[in-house]
Length: 119
Image 1: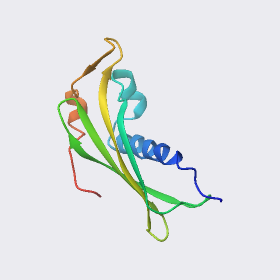
Image 2: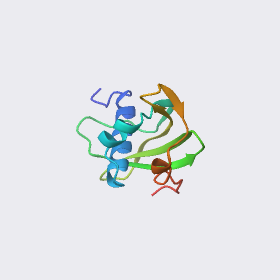
Image 3: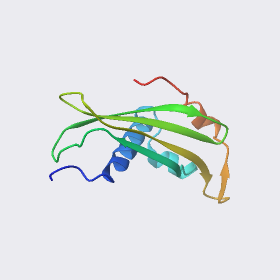
Image 4: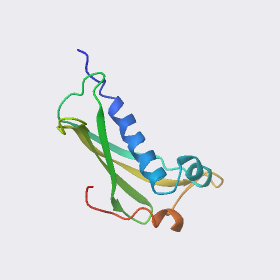
């Protein structure tokens, strides 16, 4: 079929999320030393299949923030035609690695996780 495997879209979401954090001054390696951000919910809406070797554009933004969870929204488009390939979201919690417990969003992270409209 020469189309991208459906499970890869969640990996694309992760790439977008990690890049979002990096571009905002928080490399994932630094975040991971302080807290973990497990995905507690994920959805993907497949609009059109991406083909192998297609160049894709991933947009990622914070759509919602609560006391102890936050939602990243994603939009994947074909880089040349700008056609929507997939959309979706991931909801994350904050896990403190030392205490092994869920915690509220730390202030240093909450400052970055300001909900915005799609870019």
